[in-house]
Every structure is written in C-alpha cells, then in structure tokens.
Image (cartoon, rainbow, N blue to C red; front, side, top):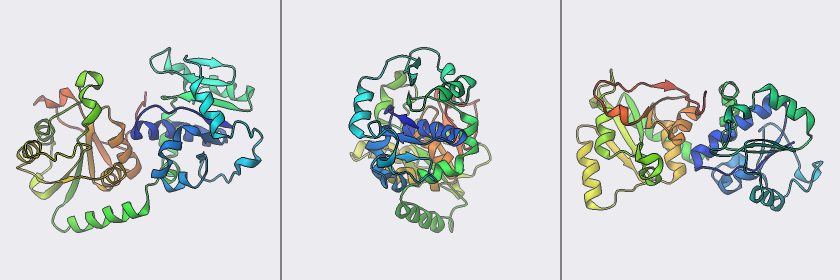
Length: 305
C-alpha cells in the first residue's frame, strides 16, 4: 500500500503530480491512499466517492478492512505530513523528493532503485511533488483521465457550446491567460499582458483567425473599465470571448477547445490538453520575438525529462 502525503502546488500541479503516482501504481499493481488530494476532491466525482481518495480507479477497496488501519486515517496522514522529513532520498519507508533539495532524478518512480525500495516495505509513504515516470503517464493516459474526469454537467455545457460555435468557426482556440501569482513567481518571466498574449497568437502559422474563435480563460476577471478595455483592444482583430468562470469551468472549457495555449510553465493548460487529447503550445519571453514561431504538441506531459 502506498500513502501519498504531498500537497504542493495548485490544481494543475497537483493533477500532474498524481498522474505520475497513479501510472506507477498501475505498473506495480499497488493501491494509493492519497491524503494530499482531500482539499480538492470536491472537484472530481470519482475522487469524491471515497472518504479518502483511493486509486487506481478499477480497485474496489474498503478502508476499514485495510491491513494498516492507523495509516488509513486522515488525522494520521495529516500528522505525518506535518512532521515529514525535509530531504530528498530514502528515509525508512519514506520515498522523499523535497522541493529544491537534492537530485530529483534519483527519486524517479520508474527506476530500479524504487523497485527495490518497494520490495523492502509493505507500506510506503510517498512525499514528493515531482516523482516522475513520464512514459507510464503517457501509457495510462485514458484511465488516469477517467479517474480525474470533471463533472458531466460541465462537459455537457462546453460540448454543446463548441458544437454551436462550429457552425460559424472552423476551430476553437483556448488561451489560458494565467495571471495571479505569475506576476511575482519566477521573476514574473511568465506573466504576460493581454497585448503580449494577442501578439503571440498572431504568430501562429497556417491559421486564419477570421475563421476561428479565441476563448480567453483567466482567474483575472477584468471587471474594471480600464482592465477590460486593455483586453478588448488587444484582441480587437480576433473573434474572441472572455470566460468568467470557476476553476472547474475554465478547465472544462479548455478541454473542449481544439487547440490550447498557455504559459510554458503552467500545468493547468497542459493538463487540459492531456485530458482532452488536444494540441498545446507554451509561451515564454522568447515567444515574443518575431523570429520564433509558436509550435504545438499533442498531450504534453510536464517533467518529461
């Protein structure tokens, strides 16, 4: 049995972190109790069904019958998270990857080292934000996305909207205008103004934007007159809409789009492309240069190195 106590990052980071753990659990035939997902489980019906999130999806497990009932309690796992070792490496039955400490490559889940570690311990505590096995994440994409499927009501809404829009537009392009903490994170290198997003869009090859609809998704609502005018002027030569939705609404909307664009480091738009099997392009400061085209790839997997 594996117990995941990591709770690092916002929604996109949390989902991709779990994708790697989920894929490894399938490969090893293990079951994961994931305390680190409790605070977001309300977003996803398949996670919400259990008192503690449990995966893989096709395992039917009763927590009360587990061999280690103490470890299967929310309070126990919360306490372990609080007093977890701040290190990268093995510590008793802890498999640790602490942010900014040590060599993350040594803590891969697809390594011989982890396989040997698993053979030595019946109950394993996973404590890591970037515990990686990217090839397995690609291999098990369908089951992982089924487990983390958003509510059908959101999917129905966006599928109906896209179907109607396709009567007038050949392609729907979703743009994740990540704002908020990106203004200060990583020196603000991935915080872009509406004008910079629009400028980058214009450089996409082989797309006639007069025949396409651009939908902007952002946690910034642009409710003041000046902020909205900046958005409207920046995208004046596009057919565009601004979606003022919740985090689930934005994620569902991006999944429904044909192509998805977002900051290069943002896992939120990447997850939408991974979940929807769509093309994704990441933008950075270099994307603003005229000689660098914006290129798309299908189903991007963060930390694929």
